Image (cartoon, rainbow, N blue to C red; front, side, top):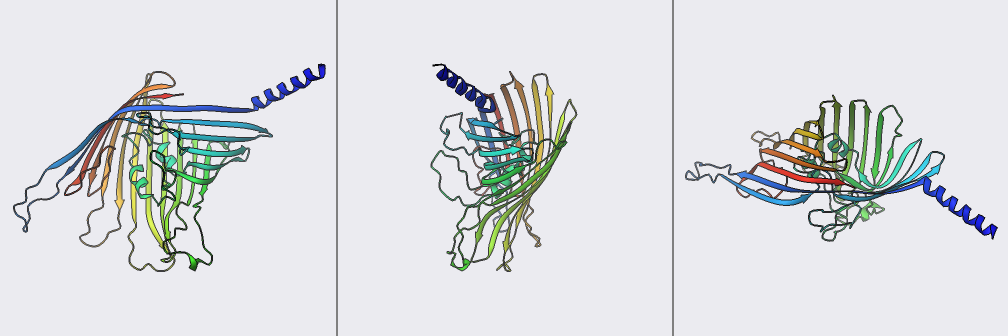
Length: 409
């Protein structure tokens, strides 16, 4: 009897020790808002010699009011845990799923926000799975409005649109697609993060597998077969010390390839961003260049026009009592590399955003944001909502607001 009691005590002690060395956390955010959008297009035409009686039709506006989600912080639910392996080693996992808090239509169908397992120690961290790319961190971590709501970083809007490739599968309705774009996140990724005790220096390098089928010899590759899309290589290095935080990042995403033509389309992203906290106000700035290009093994059959987006952002955050004022200005210019006489001017757009966050507690906040985008020379960027009318009209301005509540748990 005494032996049985002793064995039971040992088992309970071992279970307690294991529990002390491991931790699992359930976390999440519910962010819901009333949002309004107004997108105006104008008729650019007037009377001409061929049509002297043409009457300009003025402008047309599409608008929408809706209950929306993820405008200050993304609505999400996640599970993360860490196990102490001893000797300074730890194993961790992170599963994070999006959901639509405005209608409940999208639930935990995928862990498309993050799905990683990692091993960390004095050497740093090796992380496997789906995660943010290195280059998007400067768009989100060093911008007052990050990537949410009508004030979303203007640089991200056209860059995300340029960085798309054909998905490897069609997702069911209501399910987040974890392929098709590597600007925000990449799947099938191996990443290395520097250890946190380097005097403020931090960094990461990443490689995402395209996981496409290859043929050897290559001449047996079927016409139209995709062999490279989805691959991503990126890195980000920075320094944060006291009020200063500055980082530079570069990434290359493979969009598609054509073995017969010897071509590979890629998107190169480079950005540098920083912040400085003066106390009463924290300032932000970012410079970015995104370039979509096609590489050929041999000379291209015809001149190939690359397209890129150059942009910058200036922003600030100022705490006022329990609240926080946010403001930013962003500007982007498409580089279409058209140099022929009479070529149209490159499309351009700029955005103003202003917001206020009122913290009711450490977990709950009310927020309000307004933003306005002005398009020129055929740019077609909006803060959200319905599409511009473009048949016979050109996009001009896009205005929107978010009035919402965010609760962390």
